[in-house]
Length: 249
Image (cartoon, rainbow, N blue to C red; front, side, top):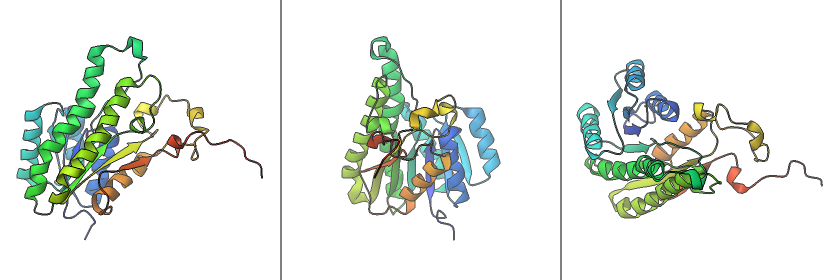
C-alpha cells in the first residue's frame, strides 16, 4: 500500500509552479487530490495528465463561496478531506515609500486572508473524515527573517505563521495538526533571473529544488505525527546569517 492511499488532499495554487509539483508528488504516492487555482487552462491540463485521482476546480482563495464550492466538489469526488496544503500566494519586492495601499492590501488578501478562509473552510471536512487531519500552510523565510523591500510579503507571511499557531491551539483536540513551511530560494520561474551569487554565503550555497520542498510537505502530512504549531524552514541555512567563505584552523 502506498503512503498516501488513505489521504484526500486539497492543494491551492496547484495548477503551476510549486503547487503543481506538490500535486504530482501526492498523486505519485497514492493520494486523491482536489487542487484549485485561478489558472484554469493549466489546471485542467494537469488534471487530464494525472488521471482519475486528480480533480481540478477554479478556486479564488480570497472568496468564501469559491472555497465552499471547492470543498464540496472534493468531497463529492473523493470523500472528506484529510489534509490541506495552503500553497496559493504571490510575492514581490517594492520599496516602502513607493508601495501603494492597494498593492499592500492585494497581497494580504491572497497570502493571509486566503489562508484564513482555507483553514476555516477545511476544518469541518477534516472532522467529517473521522480521523482529523493536517493543514500545511506555505509561508516563507520572509516570515522568519525579512529583507528590505518586502513590507507586504513579510507582513503576509508572518501572519501566516501566526495563523498556523492559533489554529494548532484551537483544533489540536480534534486531532488536526497545523504546521507552516518556510522555503527560501527555490528553482522556479520566480527565481529564473536571480543572481545566484547572493547565495554564496549560505551554508548550502544553492537553490532548493521543487522536489525537496514537496518531499518536506509530504513528510509533514503523514510522518510528522507529533508536530503541530511549528515552523519547518527549508532554506539551505539562509536565515542563519552569512557563513564565512573561508575558515582557517
